Image (cartoon, rainbow, N blue to C red):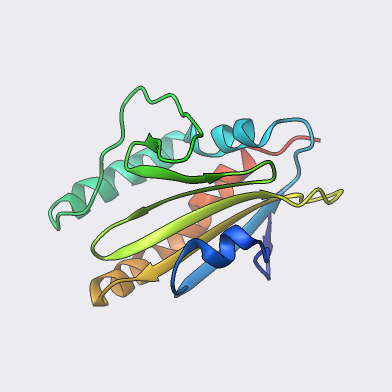
Length: 161
């Protein structure tokens, strides 16, 4: 259903997403039935209860450090450049790729949702991170194990054959 892809897609949007990439990973699934916006909503619009709990815990902790945690309780995603989904901003919407992300004092991140049109594992969800300081590097080291489990679970929500 979901596989970790060794290489990130080499799209123009990914190449221009951040000035530097300090961390990246890509998880892929299969979905030829939904639009890219629906796939993005399947991935980010609903969270399993345990993921929501971890996000609330994360937000409680990082709020003490002044990091962004805002997420509207009843957000309805509008996938248009410049729109916000809580603290996550829509940077780009193309026919085959959507770029979301946020900039903060500790790190900047982007998430690309790309449809490669391959027969299997056509949906590529790539996380890109740029550390802005030592705290960003430490933060990412601490959350990396959770990130992998959470992203894999969220991408699984978009699987359809």
